[in-house]
Image (cartoon, rainbow, N blue to C red):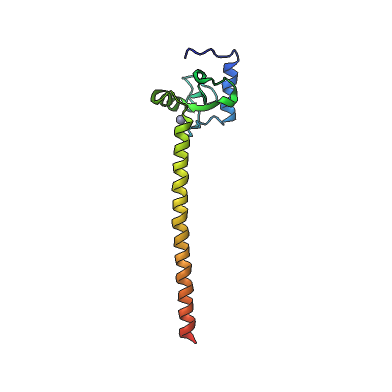
Length: 128
Ligand SMILES: [Zn+2]
């Protein structure tokens, strides 16, 4: 990291961790309140630049999000691009799976209702 960090970087990244509830926004692992590698109360947290500094991003907290050390490392190893592309695509995939499941449940309910109505009609006809 050769970028110039602001003098209040340490308190700034802690604000980001607190805002994100000390939770990695990629994998959801909980981190500790402190980011020392000796931290024993959770994963090590990093403040990740959503828009990289090299691409004109800022050190503002609005451009920062909390990642655990392993997600942060893998993101920077895989690609220099902002990781939001990947996580947004994964989130979209999850949403598609959810709606597919909901459709299946919906069709099953409709089929059951239809069977119930047909069954009741048959019962009514045969009963009279
Ligand atoms: Zn993570």
